[in-house]
Image 1 (cartoon, rainbow, N blue to C red):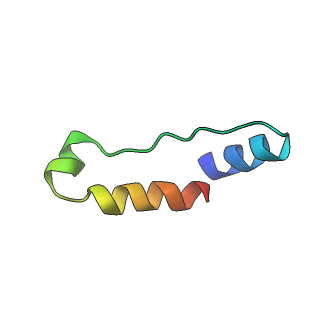
Image 2 (cartoon, rainbow, N blue to C red):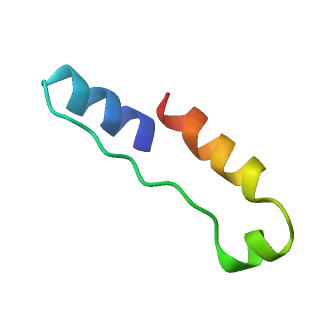
Image 3 (cartoon, rainbow, N blue to C red):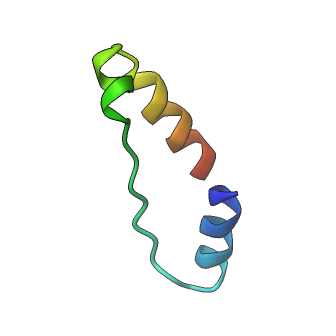
Amino acid sequence: FVGDKVAYALSQGLKVIACVGETLEQRESGSTMEVVAAQTKAIA
């Protein structure tokens, strides 16, 4: 969903600033890298 929006915005010549991050629960469980990697992959 987000990846499609990013691709469309880029195709229209817009600049995109994508914000990624984890919830407090994800951070405390030590899964920050996995969460951020998955979010980044979705918009790549």
